Length: 68
Image (cartoon, rainbow, N blue to C red; front, side, top):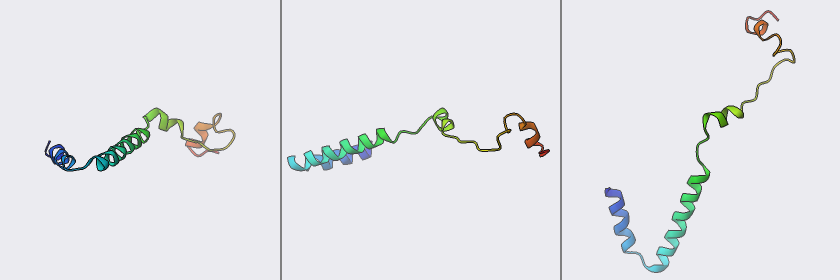
């Protein structure tokens, strides 16, 4: 709570023009935070790309134990 009190005391010292500018800055910061939300596990898994031979899905067990 100490940080909040320090910020409030600094805000009390600002004139109206500076308050408008501070408000715009705070809005930009909060919007940027909302846009950069962390993606969930399923969203990250969706982005995984797997590459391999054409018959990987058919002979996956052979590739795991190196028979092919």
